[in-house]
Image 1 (cartoon, rainbow, N blue to C red):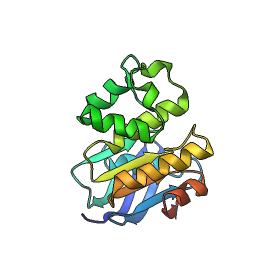
Image 2 (cartoon, helix red, strand yellow):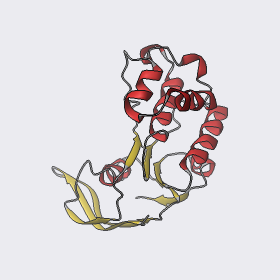
Image 3 (tube, rainbow, N blue to C red):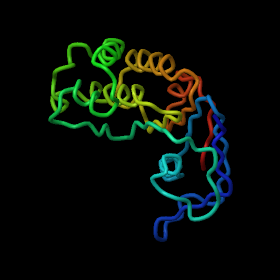
Length: 189
């Protein structure tokens, strides 16, 4: 596992320059939180890490082959059951999935269609889907939105347990969320 290094990275969308000469290092096996005001390039940085976009200038090195993500939107199959959503993407056995659902307080929702779940339930399913995937880098874009304080704590504990020393990069506006994951904070401006 290698550190992920952005060196002199710039990225524009049309006339809008989002990143200019950005250099950052995300240490291997650690949790790093990107923080900053809206428009400072946090989500763009995550998109670079996920290879969804390429930089206009500069380099991104150390990216692993396998990554998992929790986006700002939950991106569930709304007409599929929770179990089907998780099976379709993770390839895990039903027993493993049910264990994860139980850990996140979702046991009773296993056979419910995603479209009938509350926002917080959908969020936990999206997080579980990422955690049960095969990945070396986990990218989280405001992962705890819609979760109350107790659910944030429970979900963060489960995330740390399942992540087992892999690299995590998260975006959050809440320092308490970064603290829940023991994250080093990088502020973009």
